[in-house]
Length: 164
Image (cartoon, rainbow, N blue to C red; front, side, top):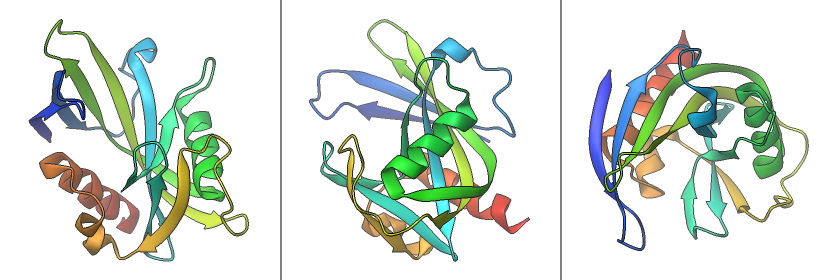
């Protein structure tokens, strides 16, 4: 499934086009263009979300791919750093192509469905990106963040993938 939505940066200076595409893997994407990996993480049927200290809002757990990391390594590291949880299993959901309308440059943001469990209680994210985590009913995620049709698809596909 492909979904296209416009997006304006928080400072309203740059306009983007988000092109979301379902994917079972990311093998066909150019590695250098892949910048983010986020997990739609579930623990005991609850969705794990994080409150971002820098963004001052709730969202999924994940972050930037570091030099030399595989997508799986990034996913595992970010989930541990931002939630103090380990991944039990994961599946690719899809990716978002983020296109800058000014110059048509683009990057990819990857999304995974994950089953996780805590290493222990959440204390803090070493980078300060997440200052609190919460386990919520997945049906209530829009009380915390609303990412339009793309967000709806990402959450619903994660639930579908993990039920199968």
